[in-house]
Length: 458
Image 1 (cartoon, rainbow, N blue to C red):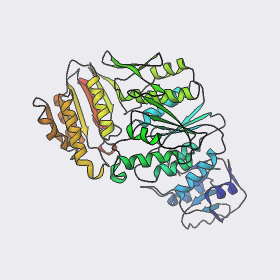
Image 2: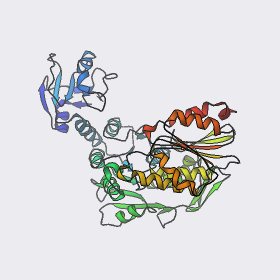
Image 3: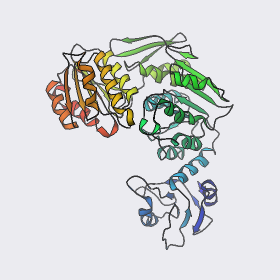
Image 4: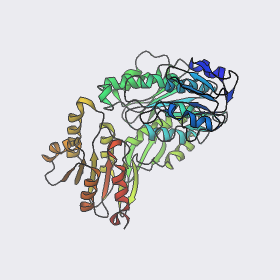
């Protein structure tokens, strides 16, 4: 619950009209579900502008509204607060609400593995605590504040994934979230269109620590040289490390793939198992283990939580496909996650073909061409029998691999429909198929097509 006075102080807004004495029960930015007694923030997005729906929310009984432009409201019972930017105001109100609670807030970021790591951390901590997390990938300037606004006294820990595609995003999210623990997965070639290079990626991601002090903790992947270098600089906060190769506070040893399907590894004498054969998921599990141990979750509970962990849809899911397998990694793609997914396809046991359906990796800026070519070279060294590319960028993978893979079948497609057609021709029951591409490439449609095909169900 918020008073008008609290809202004005949090947002540095001004009351344009209406009563100065009122309270709201919660916050909404969606006119379709906004209810009587809520604060409506008229956010302007890429498609819709909340200012266009003010009459509708007033008709539903809303009596307090935040705007960033002049509006004509004739109802004298409606309090209108004017701010410079309603998106910023959403974050301001969320920060105010977050600071009401003296509970740990874990924020995590990185170039790949964020959502899976967030889900693993929440799963581990849920063994001991009531955890609030952002659902799916609500990791931006809208999703993170909306998640924070759901904090209730029953919650004991908050776990938030924080994403970025341009300079300044993480700094602002850090100001809103005020994390007590920051987790970093890795630094690689992601969102280079605006972040330019991996140094720019590191600079942007590291802003997650901007509001952290000597009572706070940062957890990093010590096998990532950029993160390790940054952690060795003079910092006020405590640093905890996890790794496979490097010496670390939490180091995975004796890593191996079991039966071409599962991962086993040991940490401090305890054996862990994951429902994946992708080695990159050991890093995600180590980040979750680090958080669990930090918050004193019993070790055996951490082991069980990770063993039973189900991977989020479209993020390295390994699904039965007839007598074979589908690696559904369709949610998004950059060179870091594409190489990890390729390793998973190689590790997955099959007596039949390994098929890779690879679509464009977007937002890579001027290095896009070279990075797609480099992935082609990686495919040339991998166990791949059939490659289907989707999009003008993905077809740049082809020249680099054909020198090495004379027997590989290669099909370059313009769109999803063409990819489905070629996949129907080459796919046989028993094959292992990896499908991956950037979000806008709609690769989930290829996965759905394959799962529904007769050869995929037989």
